Image 1: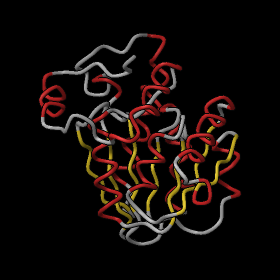
Image 2: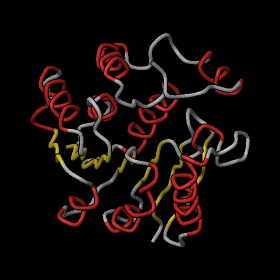
Image 3: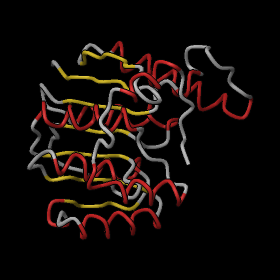
Image 4: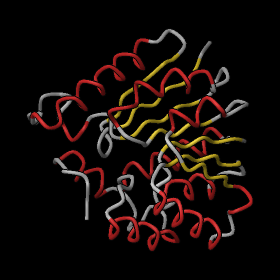
Length: 214
């Protein structure tokens, strides 16, 4: 099951990828798709892998654990310790099992709960933060995330173009209007905050990439 409605640009980008971005993790990806748990697009996974390799983080924070697929990509491409948050108990159990099966349990700490409650309790700074939680709450998380980033820290956010709805390419149904409005608040904040330099990339469902400069 795919959560992404691909246009021709994304189809072209997919054609440029290897058969699998993370061959050893295909079973984890399939598990998420079969369970109906949202999982990062394949082009997004390639960008996540690239950013991890470039940043070479020591500490990573992730909002939106899912079944552990994106977390494993970051762990396999760094020596970092991962702190990951998710409110879905079933997904958290699956992620814990997958981290254990891939020998990553000692480097991964899972927090089960609402990120709004967990983030204020987290201490220290993070070289890399991956935001892949509820889109309608990104603007709530942003102030906390910036506070956890050192100068030079990197923030990568998934699903920011909302399948073309943010640009007007696709209409926003009434049932999704609140999410789109809140996501627009986040997009304006993350692209104008003077502490960040941000670029928005039309990869997968859209990803924003920010670096803290002050």
